[in-house]
Length: 251
Image 1 (spheres, rainbow, N blue to C red):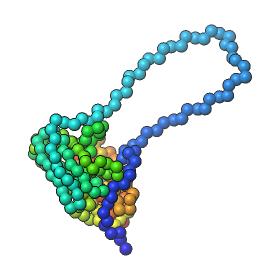
Image 2 (cartoon, rainbow, N blue to C red; image 1 turned 90 degrees about the vertical axis):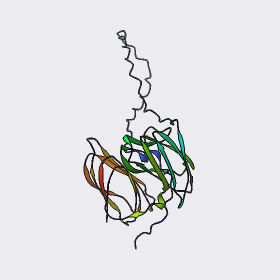
Image 3 (cartoon, helix red, strand yellow; image 1 turned 135 degrees about the vertical axis):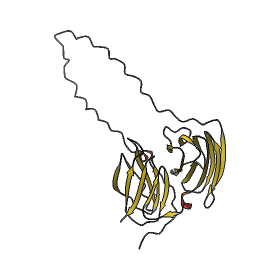
Image 4 (cartoon, rainbow, N blue to C red; image 1 turned 180 degrees about the horizontal axis):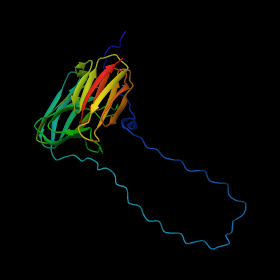
């Protein structure tokens, strides 16, 4: 018997689990035991060269709020919120319930690059070339505040619609698209095949899967690829890319 679709609730997800790569390092060797007697050098020590100071490492710029703010209202089970604007604006909303929020951006009248981000972030929730229509996922951590603000950084007029991820219409079978998207798969399978064609050299595909089995997963690659990943559906899949993709649930 297949798993039934149930309401997804946000969980505690370690910040490191949301990164494609980790850091590595090497441990230092232990100190030798002290000698029982001092060692006296027969020759005077050579002058020690003064090391050249290395450049101070730079950190990515932290996003700052923009000048204008628009209120989208309350997002709850069965209740959507909307907001519209022109140019860069903060969008505030209040979440009532334990669920992640899907932000659907209609930026079909925009130019350049449209970004969905938030103050204090060093990387955006999503970014794609305009004009575009795309969806992004927010509030995936259990301790995220119920009152939130994000930023739409775009050139031109735009509209956002916010809803619970449990209110997304379900999809089944192969799904195709270009750019960022959030999909709720009803398929009861253990794997997901991804076929990806980048928009330009170096473009990558990043997928975040949140499933009813409570096994969140981050996966993806750079460049064109066709690969199958272990993803225990049903659940929500958030896609971030500028490229063209097809995702197919497989048994």
